[in-house]
Length: 158
Image 1: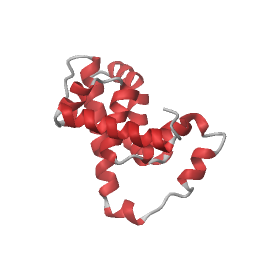
Image 2: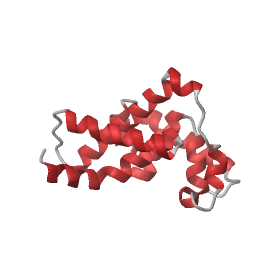
Image 3: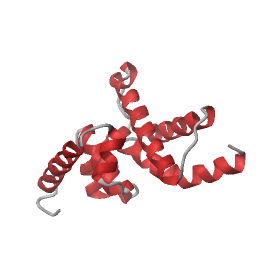
Image 4: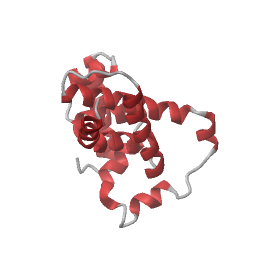
């Protein structure tokens, strides 16, 4: 991949990867680190993507897996963010993520992944099932469970 090709690839996919990382990490700095690591993985590997949809799918799964690995790390479990996440979400400067995204971030990882891939990235349930290597019926059940939880958390506003 040439420098220009990578620059276009990066511009095209940066926000998608960053959003996935932010959903998992709940911290801007850590989301940036994970986003960077995801793109470094592409740079140092020899990956060939069939089309933009394939590259976005690969990056989505790679970013989610990288974040999960970081969250399992011993060091991460022994540290705490400088600012309390709930306070950070409620400040005017960071209100760009909104109440709904804040509630999505509170979902368990399995539900969070499915909701993010469906609503934020635009995949269909069958595509999500293929990406996550889960049965399509499981994905649909997880979507149902996530919607119920979000509706309850938002006071029936969904």
